[in-house]
Length: 306
Image (cartoon, one colour):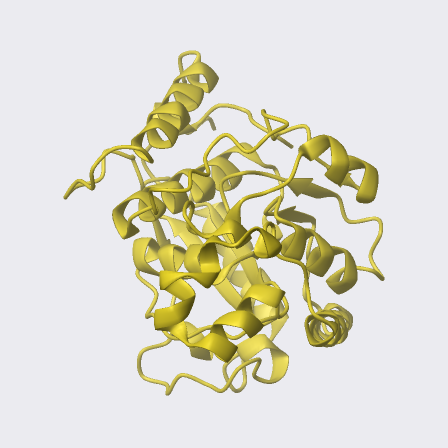
């Protein structure tokens, strides 16, 4: 049974995305105009269950509650599908330690924001040796859980160097899992040179296993040296990103390699409690479309990337 009969929605989705992109240069607003009906499902993971203390970074089994298995997660996804409700699992992985993280720790946040974050040496910041080791540990954690029943059908990654490198290490033993890069899950945009990306043409050569076809500009279209993206804007960017992947991708089990700013924005918009996310920490989000038992918003229901 069809849950919706959309008009040509892909054009509407593109227009919606363009409006959010243009809003990066505008003053912060109070309300969001982005249609959004995705909500976090509690009761499966410690990180997002209010009755449980927030665990230390990278808890055992990626934070599954005691007596909860990946089979239980799968049963919930499938069971809700029979009721006409769409549910997907997103595994957010923050990149490993970058040279900019070391610099901020060395000079202090005040001096970092006053001076160092504007220096060219931190442009599209790379992983440190420790960051590489952290990504390797993330790979081990993912491998362990994949053997225990976790599913990952697709990986979506921010096009910044530190996330691309982290993704290739974390999923190094799973070359068959498709990997796509998108602008939407980037770090907070503007001012900090560490958040200005290099050209896609150079990245495509460096990371041939990653599909960059969804990145529409070779040069960075968003970063500016004099304006830092507001929380309101990154919240909207998180909404657009989650909408696009939830409704436009067939996969129901996705890895997302991203940044602390985007992870916090996702937490805010889906109703997940916020806490500090460490470098190379994995945070699971089980998301349910609260509107799907009725009708998916037509602006979001088109076919996107598969």
